[in-house]
Image 1 (cartoon, rainbow, N blue to C red):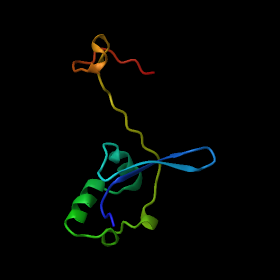
Image 2: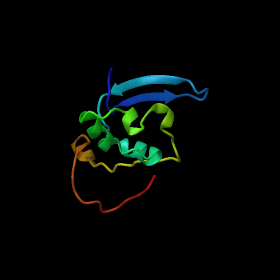
Image 3: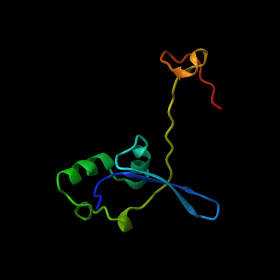
Length: 98
């Protein structure tokens, strides 16, 4: 009876078979990609659900949520190779795209 925003992750193979990975009962950092292609403000929706509004009252039933286009999110992280690749901080002096 879970009623809130969360994440269900699957892998999809070339034959369109789905393989379950995990469920997270929280909004993940990548939620902005879903927001971009569905037009649904996931954080606002989560707050409204917490306030007692149902998904159908918000028009958020699965049959009404449509994907439009694609979205990619990239993160820049820093690691120090001289210190066993532990997280590091500092200024980006050079960027070489792979």
